[in-house]
Length: 127
Image (cartoon, rainbow, N blue to C red; front, side):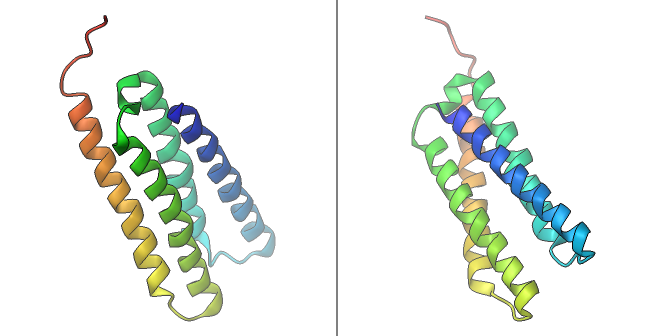
């Protein structure tokens, strides 16, 4: 069930994001604050809400678009955040992983948007 997979991966992003926040606080080095924020928002919040939406509207789990969104989002986000982190820590811009990762996430969100709008345009009729 995709809803459960989304919620499970969302909680993993939450644990990583919170751990990064704690590490930054202990070190008093907040250079990775934007990575922490993006992991929590795009990883934890967005994916958990999408998982809950899929649970509330099972029709949303049907078809290839939900799977495409899941994989684009979850391949793109670590690449995106890894590029951000390497840019800050290494002092040189790592444009390729940032551009590719953010584009994958954006494409996944675009597919999700189209899918939700199409799938929820008519009420489901119980059989």
